[in-house]
Image (tube, rainbow, N blue to C red; front, side, top):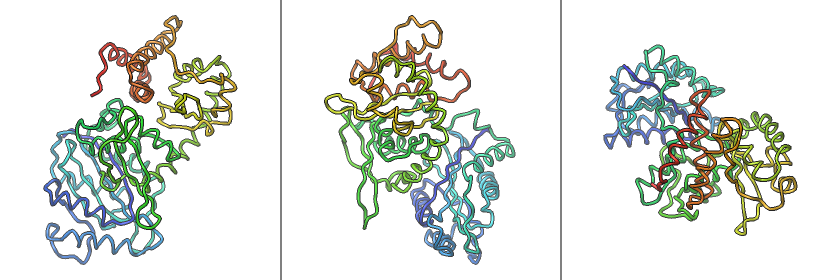
Amino acid sequence: MCLFMITRISSGSSPAGAVFYNEQKVGKGEAQRLALRNFEGIRLATEQLTPSMVAGKLEDRAALSERVKLPTFHVSLALAKGEVVPAEDLLAIADQYMLGMGYSRQPYAVYQHHDTEHPHIHIVSVRVDETGKKISDKFEREKSNTLRQQIEKDFGLQIAEHAALRPQRSELRPVHYGEGDLKRDVSAVVQSILKDFHFSTFAQYSQLLKIYNVQAVEVVLDGSKRGLKYSALDGEGKAVGPSLKASSLPYRPTMEVVERRMKAGKKIKGDRAGSLRKAADAILSQSRDWNDFQQRLLRINVRAIPHLTKDGNLFGISFLDTRSRAIYAGSELGKVFTAGSLKQALGEEYSPLRPPTLQAQSPSLRQEAKLAQAVQAQETESYGQADLIRQLLYALSADDGVHEGEQELKRMLKKSRQKPRLS
């Protein structure tokens, strides 16, 4: 058997929602209910229980504690594309995973999905134990990753680090309205931004989405609760096509989910900001002007994203670290990196990044110069600021070893010789 696992954990306020999501797939023939574990007091066979009965059992357990606001534990374990795995093996993997995560005594439902190219199972349980106490979620994702590695060894599976289930980050493409499935394409961008990038404000989340032609807009739901709608953007940054409710998209990228990612991103960025601030400060002290500053930042895989008025005046600036996939406001790195301070240091009038000459002495600088020229050529062919950032993300964000940056630069240069397409 040759497969590998990718795990995704989500939380929610109602386990019934996660149950009905999976049961709806069952009803459409896109999934099957494999097993119900620890459903004490129910004597019916697994296939005889109605969706309401399954949801009711988990809701009853969640009701044992009013203090646990997000009692749902919903995890997916994804397999390799085209892999055929017996149901008993899938159940054994699910049981070992739940044991390792501390949920072996919890009631949980296991579903196998067939609706994507990558077969996967979903497990729905609750974070409240039989005494009403919350099951600890400290270091949950780290524990899940360690457990996933152990399961791969125990079952003789392919090691996930040596393969790639999800599309490579370089394969993440901007949404083009009217081409392909809008809901699927928007969802792919949203999921990737939420999972792979670190941000601490809604504005930063929006900036990342807009790089891939997606817009998130806050809406008011019942009462004062805030919701989200997503839509595609055209080449001029204007919304096109229908809006999609967050609750209608896979994995429900609601405001609640975004806020959790913002909170996590703030901590992660805080831990990393010091080293980036130190490196950027050294670069700023050596920079002659705006172009020099931006060229030097590229060498450490950081892209400056200016925020301009319609007249082209700089009123704000962000910094995208393509290696750690984190976006920072200038003020998060320090007062000297705000738009006002940078104007004083580099010139009152902001100037866009220009390609460097090819006279650089080191091979790495020559490669950077070629990269900049390639993306600059695309930019002048009406690709614009967002597409330049996308190309840099493609070229600089992979994690394939010590020389991955150079390899991606070579691929980028080869690709730049071809006429760029909008598809």
